[in-house]
Image (cartoon, rainbow, N blue to C red):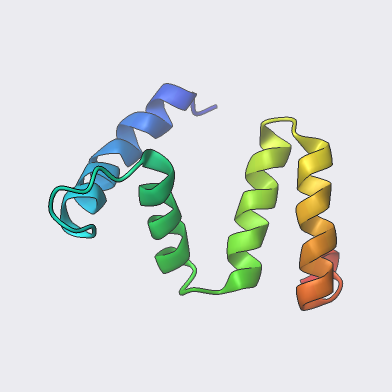
Length: 84
């Protein structure tokens, strides 16, 4: 199983590149902003997939109620999200 530190070591160099190259000079982008940019570009600005990533991350972190809130709102926006 991949440990959290292994994921961090793999993703951190890309995060730093994003921080340096994708935000205006002098702006201290947060990790969340950098990862958000990665996710939005990876999924080609597909709101359904971006929302699904957020929902899955919350589930993984055991924030089930918050994930459910996102699922309900995604269903309003995109229809039944469980079958996409």
